[in-house]
Image (cartoon, rainbow, N blue to C red; front, top):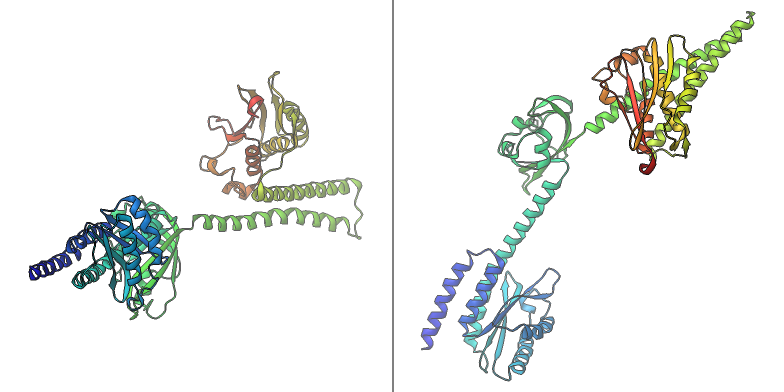
Length: 519
């Protein structure tokens, strides 16, 4: 009988060892190990505990153990020595305490044994088996369980490694999918192994049309502005002659034939032997950086021009008036001083607008609100500007029941003044009409002229900072800040400003402000 039992146990071990090597799901594997362990030792219940990353022991699977008994066993786990080295792992004391607790809990009807699961000189866990009758476990019982426990430990280690690999892949997938920049993982042959959604959106191509394709088929540059392409760098020996990252900047072609400016950083992954295994490409949309550079260039150009002209005029007239070899009559002196005053005012306005633009960028418009009579402001400004032009006729038209608005009076005056000034500047002659209308929850104020109007291609940009049309930059003075400031002021009032595209007799710009309950 005894040889038959040992033969059956040996066959069990061989069969289960083959089966365990094929199972990679850790929870399924542990349940199977525990079931086989109970069968091998003719037990009625069992428990497997594993060491966690924090070095503590935690129950993972149990069979035939009541929750109450498992709760009693849990404090016992703290007695398991914290030694990964099996040579230092002392379990006899654990077994002694386990046996005492088991006997006491079952009134002597059960006994238990525990053996470590060891692989590569590391203790991964402990298998506890309980029998439904008193008595000690034989040496053969322990040898069988020990042999199986070591076989099981190898399978558990493999399953843990697989679980870690799956978890790491999930983490990598999450990082790639949530990244704002485009990310590509290339093989050493420059084939794209992996592409994240951000890059797919960037070049308007589905992920499946990117992965598996050669790098140079997907990343096609309309214009290269920084350094060499990846293919040229690899042909020159990168990265084997240098571990430095490679940076490429240019305009990347999209599927719809448009392009997007990008900066691409290529980072090599090398094996310990120095062999190139992968290339990680991080692709960043640098449209905003380009716009910032263009804005800086425009700012320097516009401001230098706008500052240079009045300064030159002021200096010229001052030098003329200071000439000792001339005797200027009073009319010439008065005319010269008037021009100096006008150019000084122009300089002061430019400086104030620049300061306003800086304040807006730093934190918005500061408003000092009070009750504002917009029709009175419009009439006052029309009278003032009429004295500055004899080619335009300024008219004002507001309904008698136009409501008082709770707003910043100086800022509203600044907007209307700017709109009238633009009409005088860009319309050579004709009527400039300032009108108002009352709606259910807001009021609308418009300034229209009889000039050439605003070109359709300029309409989306006229409220941008420093924007000026190409014609205006050649023929008119200005820094491109007036309408930008007007829009910012409207935003601060929870209002709107826009170009009336239905108006065909010139340019018409309107703004709306809430009143009553919408303030």
